[in-house]
Length: 112
Image (cartoon, rainbow, N blue to C red; front, top):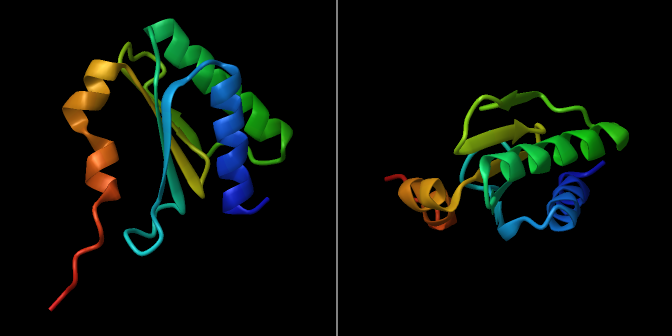
């Protein structure tokens, strides 16, 4: 599965679970950690965990088991690392505080 196909799978999984404000950010040229970052808001901690579980189940079913899941005990932020795609599932107030959308959407800086 290509990184683009995996990103689309994640977006579909989150849409099925009624994820709020799903945003995919291309990381090419910004970092080598992944090709895409997907950020989504959830309406409650239960919603975050249900969405994370759906992403994990759907990716496993497609032959891409997660590299790791962080924040399973968290009420505010869960991260699912799928290798080529990193998924951040956050409560709106946490998302606003860390502003990953804005941070990673900035153009890469030029080195002198």
